[in-house]
Image: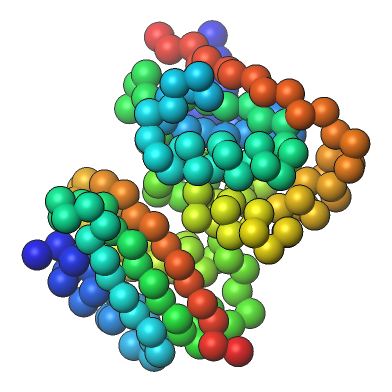
Length: 77
Length: 120
């Protein structure tokens, strides 16, 4: 299940996340919305926050198992 | 003929606002490209679009240059702004308009331009 894999990768990348949500937007297992709130993002630009999320999911973005990724990040400060 | 990489970096460097998207403004082929296009339009940006669909190498070269894995990608004066989510978020916070005002002036033109890359 791709959503579970995404969740696991994000949990690994953001062990201190205070909020973490993965939604299969279309029910087709390849369009996802992720929400991550973590102190890791405090002080980072939106661009760098999204980069961190993309980095955590690089392999899945590259091999096409994620066709679409919507990202919402939040700091905790 | 210039290489793809040269053409892509040329667009990024020279165009005030570059949007790499799936399709063209006349025929948008992806919801996220549409979101980015609409957000830029709402912010009163001049927009130069490049369709990445004609050849998979366009996307490969672009992502190699930008370090950003997904499409669309928005650049303002050579600087990567982000994808559709960031562009929308920046529009909602007013930061996109501020960024454009700063980079291009408040009385900027709002031309829409489509660049087709030359493929060998």
